[in-house]
Structure formats: structure tokens, C-alpha cells
Length: 295
Image (cartoon, rainbow, N blue to C red; front, top):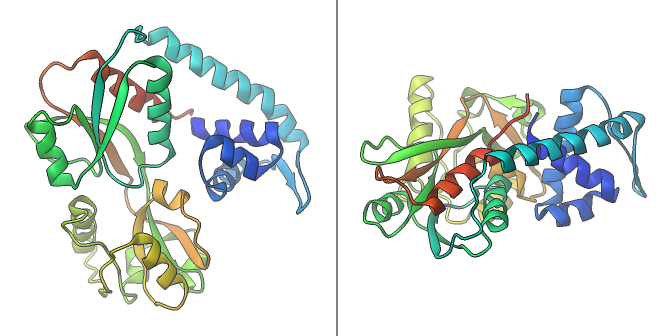
């Protein structure tokens, strides 16, 4: 059970409206619905009665609400107990990023803003190789990277993991399964961004294909994920791969997002090997907290 599942549950329970809860959480409504459904599966109980007109808590949802609030409050106290005072942090924290880091990344930024309101966070989106080189040269203070890079001259801290997801036409037979294997889609053209745009994901998939002795059909390269998903959903018999955090934030009709039967991928924060200043340590702490999972 993930902390954010409880956060989403409490937001919906308080608003009794999935759309308003999503706006309050600054994420897409499909992501809220998916996490609530996952929480219900994990708990083995329906938490909301949903109709086209209203949303109401079930008896089980009513019993869970005070416990969920208490758990989130306890977690906030836990974080506060171990946090070093950061109110006096000033200056600029330069953080390298990539697209689709998802709502956990938003939680990191919110945590920093709360704990260090006078610290400015400057986000710099760069290709992976350029991002890591900027970190080495001192042009960045830290960088989010996934999958975890094999680098000996940088320090990396794993902050969370996430699944890889296949985005395929909702009409494809594999869409009827909750988990899809690479071999299930071997005959369907795979559309990917160029390796230069995303070498980590590209190389990771190629390694999995070789390990499983699967030679995928190749489709047209992707220049825009949104355009590619629209094409796949409207007749282009193809599929692509997304990180689950990115898939949760997309609203695309006629596309089925199905978890791939592959190991989860680590998201890390990379820093130099030198001792880190307080602002960078705050970022590392916030990243670790965002990745906390309630057992």
C-alpha cells in the first residue's frame, strides 16, 4: 500500500468528487481513479459507491477514513521528527530532470517548498548524457535519472521504483490481460523515441529483448508521445512503452495501459561524490520520503 493511495483516498472522501479531488491533488482524474481502484483491490473492499450523479463512502470507506488520516498524520510527524531545520536555507538548487517523473516528483517539490520556503528550485530538463555531464561540471547540483545509470564518478540514491507499461490499442487481444509479456507483442510494431532522446529506456528494453530472445517488429520513431498515442488509438497497429508514472498522468482514449512483465525500474537522484550542501541533502530526504511505501 503506497502513501499516495491513502492521500488520494482521503482527498476523494473529503470532496466526494473524483474530479475536484484530482484538481486539489494537481494530477489527472484517471490517475486518482486508478489508485483508488488499486487500493480497493489491495484491501479487498469497495470504498466508494459511484454513480453518474454522486460519490459516497461505503461502510468500509467510512471506517478507513479516520485510520487513513491518522496514518498520514503519523507519517508527517515521523518526517518532521527526523528533519533538520531548513527554514534558513536560501539560494538556488539546480536540479536536472526528464519528462514524466509523475506525482512523486511533485511531492518532492512540495516538500522542499514547505520545509525551505526561501530556497529556489530551478528545474533543468536535459537529455541524459548532457544532464550527467552538467552535474559533473558543477552546472547542476543534482539530477533525477531513470533507469539507474552505471557511473563510477557519481553518487546515486534510489528514491523509488516504478513499473514499465505497454500502451497498446484497447482492441488488441493483449489488452484483455492485466500483465503483458514482451513475447505477446512481438509481432506488433514497437514505436520508440530515438536512442539519443532516451538512451536509458532504449538500452534497458533492448537488454530485455535479448534476454528473452524476442525480436520485436519495429514501428515509426516517436517524435511526440501524445501524437503517437493518438495514432496508436485511432488505427495505427503499434505499441509503445511508458513509465507507469507517465501513463498515470495521460488521458488518451482507445489506449490500454498494461503493466509489462518486467522488473521495476529504479529512479535515482545523482550527485557528485563530494560532500553535499544542505539544500542537496534536503532534496535527497524529500526524494526518499516520496518513495516511502506503507506495508
